[in-house]
Image 1 (cartoon, rainbow, N blue to C red):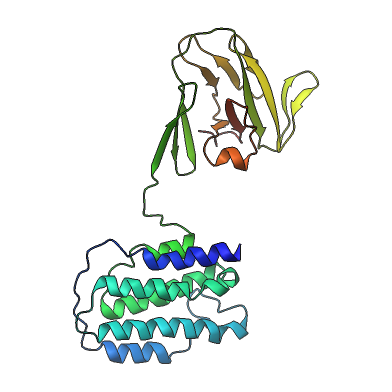
Image 2: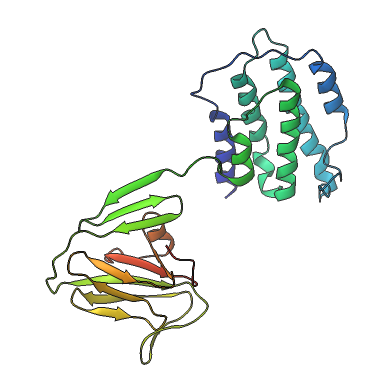
Length: 270
């Protein structure tokens, strides 16, 4: 896990690449403000921040923040400071937290980001190019999730957008063929199928379902094969989510299952 975090934070240094650099003019009082910023005591209780939980880590965090201030000052004093150069320094600065990233709770990460925002204000840098969001949340919430689309061997189209997966069934003619359907119960209640056959919470079952059959669950959900399309679901209370992509591995869906679904609390389905 630590290795993953280190690689993730180091990749932040590359996030500003590929954009056009805009030359910036350094404000006249920048050096004075850099000095004030470096001199002030950091990671102490103020406003809504409770202060760092482990006092012995405060000098470590402070040194890393002050190094970013020093890097910003170097860019500000250069002949041609640009937004890209500052953003590169932000990435390098955030990567210095890789060795202690797991020790940073949410409030400490927020404080790291707010200190960098103070430095950005000194030089009038408008954007970190998404790096602060990625450091804070692990992703940039301002970015729209990219849509991935693929078609399985049966002609069904899967569309993955962020954590949501939609399934567009292929046009279908019933033949009496049997399909394996994976169903995982992610609710806190048992889901009944027929007498003495239930799916317990956090349990899955794989059903051998003919395309002429209907699978009825006692929560009102029905799985059936339509006349025109493949597997169809009657889900009036929004209790079913389709699985695809990386979620097949996360839910340990067998390789021979043609369809995979998870039953979720009412209103939480696709």
